[in-house]
Length: 484
Ligand SMILES: Cc1cc2nc3c(=O)[nH]c(=O)nc-3n(C[C@H](O)[C@H](O)[C@H](O)COP(=O)(O)OP(=O)(O)OC[C@H]3O[C@@H](n4cnc5c(N)ncnc54)[C@H](O)[C@@H]3O)c2cc1C
Image (tube, rainbow, N blue to C red):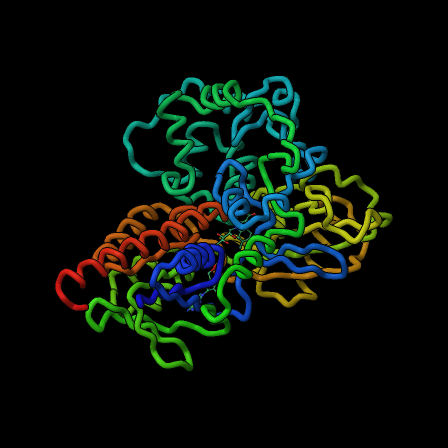
């Protein structure tokens, strides 16, 4: 029987294992082992229920425009658990010039598509607004060369739009530095827009015209909103996949130390404290910097390219308060903080305003602050007490919140967010060239072609499908050569 080892039990590895499990159930002669170094599966998806609060340590949502999470939920029978965001709170503030400014209505991506709210917004100065309008006249860059997000936005919309909108809103999602982030790898849509319409504003106006009006939810289905989650948090997704896997095929608390090529067409997987395992195929889903060490002995070029993908460090600080202690309305999804403001938090989500059912009752609120990211990583390494104090000081200064939390929980993500810096696509192409030269060896996950949970499900499932096809073909090759 052919054997596959899946390394890493985050959403990518779980998605791959799920496809292999289904193949087994439908009679394919295949065995698999999912190896995870942590004591739990899920990787960066980590939901905890603490004193009746639903606390998200990592991601709190997925983007509904990518179909793969909803497809997986349907497949797993948990579609009814999907939940849209609370649209009554659908607004975001930007902390700039020592106050919270509402992001103007009609701002799509980066650019204004409604004149009046934008014109009256105090967020961007008048010179800044006029500079943004230059986008209508600046010719597109036709060199085809990659550039950073920072250079692109400054070129098209000006420095103020970069500092107050693009960096906190878009760079913030990746915990990245816009002056390092590759436009081609992270935001290929902006390039298509510039090439097709010659202007981001014209592209967004066209997109707005073509956006269908939101439809009421179908009976029994969640209202589709831009951000979506599960009623019990994102962990419902990884927990349900875990339940579907055969427990004897899952090894947690065990670290893969290296993979070697051979004997023959096989691979040998070394797991800390266990006998090496021979595998016909390997799906490696550990984050790139960890994957680099696993492959270093058998393919140095692949290892160097994997190690060349930087990873940023960040933390989420979840805080619960008595509602009666909060004297300002938490009437938004939260606020973002530009790096140029030199504060110690990057953003704050008002979790119990963005989502329903996050607290033990209406008398409490839950919020979470983000610390760290590419430019402030050192802040993540202080102890819990100092981090809590720092975040409370920031919330006092920014929103005037002076209450003490009734519960708090901090999650640190050291090297937790891959950075798609300029040159990323070449690095990924080099890695893929090396895996193509090693049949049956696949390297996938959030570090390469999309950090979103939907992207990870997609690439993890595809890697498993490719593995199955490869094993079938190699079986046929062996049979033809009379091996068995
Ligand atoms: C704070 C934060 C917020 C985020 N918010 C969102 C969001 O709202 N929406 C969204 O779509 N995405 C979000 N993301 C990104 C998203 O969570 C990740 O891109 C995605 O979960 C990555 O999944 P993965 O399986 O590729 O990697 P991981 O989840 O990192 O899984 C890899 C697994 O490999 C294991 N591993 C590593 N080395 C070894 C080894 N040697 N042996 C065995 N196992 C090993 C690790 O322990 C880990 O469990 C967020 C990320 C972070 C950090």
